[in-house]
Amino acid sequence: MGSYRSMATTLYRIIKYGIQSFLRHGWLSIATIAVIMLALFVFLNLILFNMMAKNAINILRDKIDINVYFNNNVSEDDILKVKRSVESLAEVKNVQYVSRSEALSVFQKRHQDDDTIVQALEVLEENPLSASLNIKANDPSDYPIISAYLNNENLAGLVDQVTYNQNKLVINRLATIVNTFQTVGIALTVILTIISILVALNTIMLTIYSTRDEIGIMRLVGAPNKFIRGPYIVQGMIYGIIAAFLSILLIAPLISIASPYIKVLMPETDIQQYFYGHLFILLLYQLIFGIAIGALSSIIAVRKYMKI
Amino acid sequence: MISFQNVSKIYNSHLTALENIGFTINPGEFVSIVGRNGAGKSTIIKLLIGEEKPTKGRVIFGPYEVNKLKPAELPALRSQIGIVFQDFRLLSVKNAYENIAFALEVEGRPQSEIEEFVPQILDMVGLAHRAYNFPHELSGGEKQRVAIARAMINRPAVVVADEPTGNLDPIHTADIIKLLLKINSLGTTVILVTHNKEVVNHLNRRVISLDNGRIIRDEENGKYVLA
Image (cartoon, rainbow over the protein chains, first blue to last red):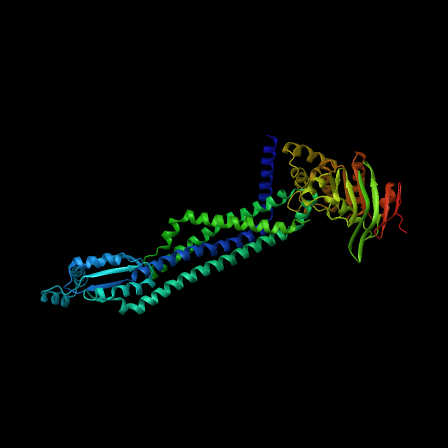
């Protein structure tokens, strides 16, 4: 069909003009790509920062728990009954039962090099340790609720002590840190993303501003709007694609340098492994973000100068 | 074919560009529009190509009532009018060949036609050897010839030249006028806006004289006379 062929020709010409304009504007293109690359670099850093923050938060969360120690005369059945009732609470993530003998073997293992303790244990005829439940909550701020449940009168005869009260201050402080970390992370992401989008947008708009006379000429020669807008959008997308690849190339060596230091701070976080493990998805994010910035700012900028 | 009917263009209470003017241009004519700076010459061109709308009156071009066209309909009109400007208005990132080809490409004409017509017209304006030079590598006269070639490539019914020789020396001016006469002899209507007295007197064609937004003279075989 003729119309199909002419559409293909038009598309081909629009892409050709876009590439041509990109290549022939030389320095202007390089400078624009550099700015978009910085915007994408910030974006990439935010992704990695959020990933590390999430990791750090999970590590902190995992370290928070409460233990319930039972009196030694309480039977295992009774303890398991308590376990089941605790598990039925909505706030509880999981409950682990540690029997008296398990507690003893863990204790012995931990202190196997300490002769005094080993000897002291041998002197004792009976296992001095209590059975306990180790409870983890879904959210650190749930611990007071769980603690209140454990301290109620029904359990008064069974429970020796609940560690929450001793650790209350630390748990609350960690809960606050976790929440602050999350809030700051989200706020930082939003603000920096907006700033980097505005900077990239402004740069592309300036690039197009410098060629606004050409838009007028194209109008006067009788070019339909798609012929004017199209090449600028193609050009903007090329900026985005190149900037996306460059931002990944730029951050790779920085991650290699930073990774060992981060590992010292947070042993469970291997940022280098995360980066290379997620290389394709990260590149995809960068491409989507870069192409969107490039194309959108071109559309916005050209629209301004097309009213001739 | 072109007709201005009781056209006024009033920018504001202090600036009236055109006041109730009317004229008709027939196919194949070569018309010069003359007048001092600010007489309203360029406003006539802007109204003709739809760059501005008249405050009153009608602007007719062939089947189009230009004053009623929407922005999206302008490309169709403009592809039938070849426009040449004093400042050339070539696309700076395209070479001579591409500047001319652009006018065909935006019309969706096939590649084969472009490869056939563009060299022909470059030859006609005497720039075959400059096909792959960019505007900044061309002289003023050469740039204007590229602009004329671009205006001609669509075989428009009308070529409008707005002060085409304003930036050129006398020798290049003569070249450009010769080229416009050649285009006219091939059947294209030419509208030449100028304040170059020698050019107008030498042409000895129809002259429309403007002063202060009014037509003060409209003569066949006219001279450049401003009262």
